[in-house]
Amino acid sequence: EVQLSESGGGLEQPGGSLRLSCAASGFTFSSFAMNWVRQAPGKGLEWVSSISATGGDTYYADSVQGRFTISRDNSQNSLYLQMNNLRAEDSAVYYCAKDDYFWGSYRYMLYWGHGTVVTISS
Amino acid sequence: IQMTQSPSSLPASVGDRVTITCRASQSISSYLNWFQQKPGKAPNLLIYAASTLEGGVPSRFSGSGSGTDFTLTISSLQPEDFAIYYCQQSYSVPFTFGQGTKLEIK
Image (cartoon, rainbow over all chains, first blue to last red; front, top):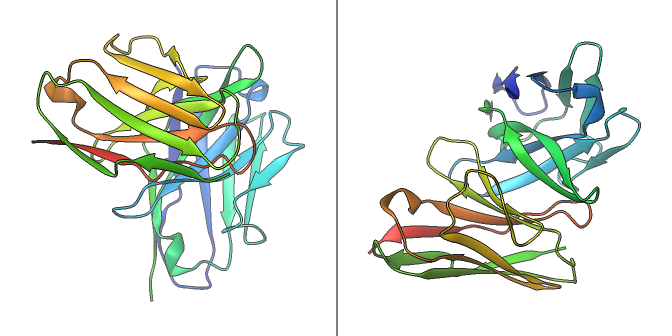
């Protein structure tokens, strides 16, 4: 059974840093790209970042480019999101989600974690 | 790529047939996914590649479209279907979501 479990959220001041983690199990972690998606309170879903299976390719939303860094440790089946220079607008539930593929090219996110709450406030 | 859903809110009754529309700002072929989200829960994948139903999703859900215009149809609304629905393009980064459509009880 695929399981994803986020941790590391909490209350941080503007300008501060947080590191989110996502522990994965139930699949060959090193074979799949992974994503972070967030949802601000009362708002819609926002894709934040993706990382390839090997970790060699990373992608970011414009809203976090230069402040957030996605990484992974395939030996530990773990995904990370280092968030620096945090802003109030980064307050959200952060989900990790596993990439899956249809016919090798159509990608979709079937498995999601429960989310971890990040609150940025002074 | 901007994804625009309509309507933003959709009042409906149990048994109704409803359709939600998603429009992409440029062609995305069939790289379109649909999610359902209920309060306090992670999104639940319903349809991928525009029209392929994820396993375990009831057959009353269907998706269609390609290029820039897509639809999600629920053939006969059930009480558990009242939720927020999002489309998402997986054609190119950033993998943008629509703003959501809230399906409400009329």
